[in-house]
Length: 150
Image 1 (cartoon, one colour):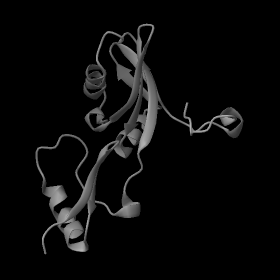
Image 2 (cartoon, rainbow, N blue to C red):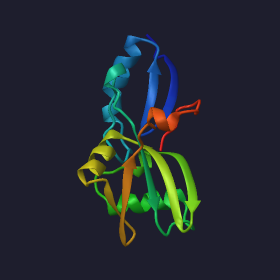
Image 3 (tube, rainbow, N blue to C red):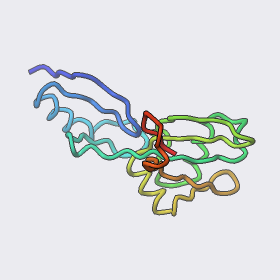
């Protein structure tokens, strides 16, 4: 049988490939771990409920208003082992005073490492905190028609 894919979707920390049939899914599961040229978490193929959870995190990167988000994430990568900012998805970024505020979607490996470090990461000549986004409570959501995270 020919390989047949239904679509490819980019999500925080992963590339989701929708296979049209079992033969294609089996082929992808065999080939993915053998692919080279990838920096970051090991490549693997997962099915349905095995797909790892993605985490949304927020942070304020001090003294970075004049830098790009890519530059700031690069500093996080080189100053902290076990996290993979190249695989993170930037959800929003904003400048406030001299800080760069970001909300990112991250992979499970990075999340577990950040959690292990007490949500504290080395950044520039200091440290920053990355906090998981939590859904707002019912009271906080009153009058809001769409899900809001803070």
